[in-house]
Length: 492
Image (tube, rainbow, N blue to C red):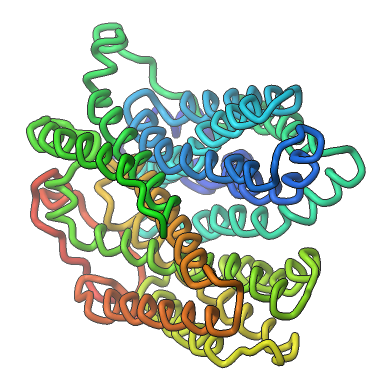
């Protein structure tokens, strides 16, 4: 007997034949590019903003850190909202916040307004990735796919990498020709396009049950106390890390005072926001988070640390340093799709760890007399690292996260990535505390060698890491507190 078509199949003709048509994926790709482009485009506007608002350039760093902090907290929150309220609703709500942030920033008259705008943009752009993962997972299940849609996952990865790479050039063009306010106002036309596409092409969410659509019911389903506890804890932790090497004991105290009761609450909550028991049982997912954090620590240490060193030791301009690192982003984008389309997991992750070790060793060989080509080669090696880790870990996330928690898991995946990024900036400030010297660069290389070794061990010793992705059957291992589900080893 033929099974009746699902609601999504009935409303989307040809779903089984072509589940991931361009009309479905395009708004997801545009949304996935909003966070990285806003993260990188602001770099070109900091000096003009400081000059017009009559503040120090150092104080404008808040415009960078505020978006990272907001994103680190908002990513898993948006994922949870997508699971409970629907990914389309959450995606559109995020787009509205980005639009509002663009308006506030474009009209801002002081640093406080611009910081508020960046927070709005950070929260709004954080909805795109977890919502995309929920929509992709549901569409794959409706179409009866037994393997991850590698091409689509690769497209999401490329959207993030490519926009991060082109952010500074676009920002330089906009700020240079139209003024720094366009670093914010550019969000208005982009979000208008994204909203129109999402309204037209993304599948509608199911109608919410009236009995479960009240504020108290929704707050209970999303675990609002858990979200608030996580937000306070994560904010305090990030502020502590950003303040290093000078210890911010007040931030650390807030982190402890918020984290302890939050953990106790989450362990007692039947449907927690942060499923500690489930994560402890699902070691494969926990290792995916750690690999992502450690590898991005390396990639962003190169982006930030080598840029500082090139400007100080080689007297290269900011534009010149950016151009020398541009091939890194290009290689990442070019390699992502072919790697993702084959649903490879173990191979790319091993390649990521090995190239991170090779690149770190290369950093230790660089001196202020090294030719520019040597710096480009090191950045190219880390470009391979970036592509391989994003593709491998993103596919591993898709396979190891419980299907009904893919939104929250995807948000936490991004949060761990932000922690790696923030830690890279902390390490850079420590090794270059006496200036961006060759000695500081070599110390950075040593730290990255240690991180690369940790990533390699987390990969080669992971007996549950598959060579090629395949969807797991839904069983008790996917439930909170269930045992870790072994995945079969497939030949690549």
